[in-house]
Length: 298
Image 1 (cartoon, rainbow, N blue to C red):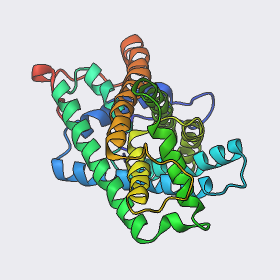
Image 2: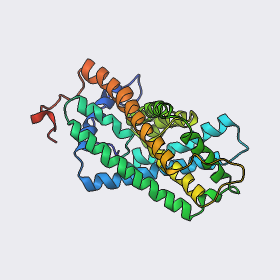
Image 3: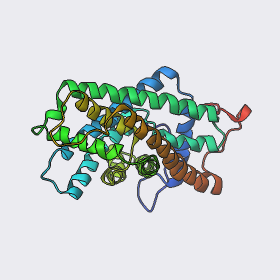
Image 4: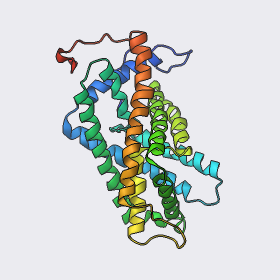
């Protein structure tokens, strides 16, 4: 999600941040570019994003593997370090499914079609999955779960059990809450002008969703297969019931988490900010009138 050209910044309460109206304009224009990106770079950037979020999850699991930390301290500290994943996406540049839920702003302005949205989401979701699974392989080969006398692996197993045990509806609503916070983190990152600004904007929303135990479908593409590998290879401590960790349960998690992430990001963040700043206040950049209401000339 590398930055593109944006309109001149207007002071926001005396700060150097981009104003909310400018962010809306930037996200809308980026949505058009993302929807019409050539297949190969879109797929590769998606693979990079899946691995990047997985790296954030890896960092989180190191904190999770310290049994001496209290619950709140462990979750908050883990959430802060997990923000590395979104930072790699937003600053280094990659295509993340949960963040790309914001392209509905371009769709709502009739700059891209429904088919464009679904195509982008499908390619990016699959690419994110490939990247996450690639990182699982690398972490497995370097015996990541053995860290801290195996406590990191135990932490991952317990995390997976907690993610796979709830029913479909619960996971769905956890997915909604997750991507409200993730997309707010993306929104705040777009307000910043420097790397430090972007990092400061995204850390707390990301830390909040992690600490609260909400469901991020792309992060789960790393957490859950890693736990499944541990079960399949017998790396499970005695007395820990891991019967819920199986392929069917992983699918049971990823489907509602994905749907919830779409509703949270597209509906509760993208649509609402579009309604305020484009529909209600008219936006900054005049809208093009593409033939067939599908594409804007670049």
